[in-house]
Length: 453
Image 1 (cartoon, rainbow, N blue to C red):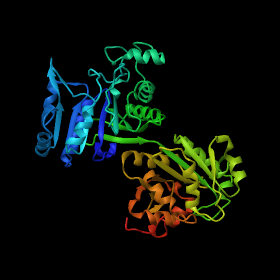
Image 2: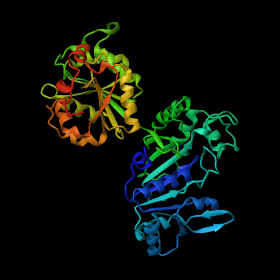
Image 3: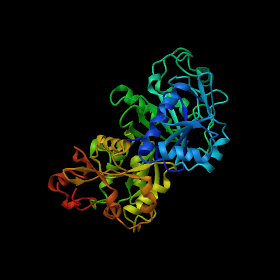
Image 4: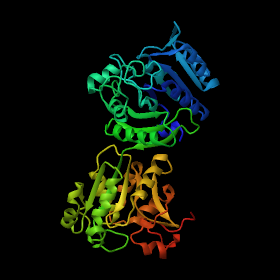
């Protein structure tokens, strides 16, 4: 995944880079990526760069140059670094208040700002006057390197370790652990200090390997970091990669639809016992919980009290669909979506009677979303689609406008062009095994009719 897509950038953004472990490399890489795509990219710093880093940019010039000269340089080079002073081996940027004047006078598409110092360390806590983030910043990229894991927590390996030790009681010189990175990144007084309230915050975990143990550590750090509502997403990757972002971890919720609306038209199926004497709705809810989705809502309707009794031991919050007698899948989704917390990026939807659902299918759907393979994802086995389904939040407003009596097929037909079918190796996406055995072609599809896929 390229940076522009992972960071969801738009013309007019002011992007500030804070933290440690690859800020300058990230700013430069993003600048070239955007320039190659035709963007007019300005860059600067509110702190300082080393003079040898000037060679990383296609064009550098004084911030006090005439706006017309800066515009001409953008036309010629696409990517221009502006600075104020060069002295004692360092390049200094203009003061913070200069940002607004620049935005008002120069016809650039985006401004990239290195707004923090880290002395080449892979991990940091800010000093009292750091970072220096312009108030006009719309996107903050907070950087940390996985290279920090296992290093001693001392001044030779970490920028300002005393702040972490004082705040959390970490033991000096002890090996840095994954949760420590997350604690600092999500802390309002440390990793989020100085971030404008309106800015989107994206963490970039640099030097994440494509495979192995540390990739799992990175996912743990992402999940813990996302406990802060200030952080919108965590990108895992490596600045130097051709596709620098391997996956984008975001806040995903889940709905278990136990209203009695079901593609198999058997309203009592969700309360029938099968595995170890447990009802189907309890089995489905437990499997969704095991996928480590933090925000889950059980949507009730038909036989509400019995559904709640079957799932009470799981501690999942419920949302009741008051229109379940006359409503369909859309009615249940509306009730569930309104009960979920704000700032979710997507929702995973699972029928409450799909007892055969395997956790690995949930994992594959979530992994496909993290990789950027699609944002309206339906699993498919041998040409036939099933559940669970993942729906990105950008589709929710249009989904909520559909008639409440609409079923699953109506939803799929409305968003047909946006659907990504994910081939899986499990027939547990169906309500029972016979569905997969008898109807393995797209002709009788639970969600959509054959679309030539």
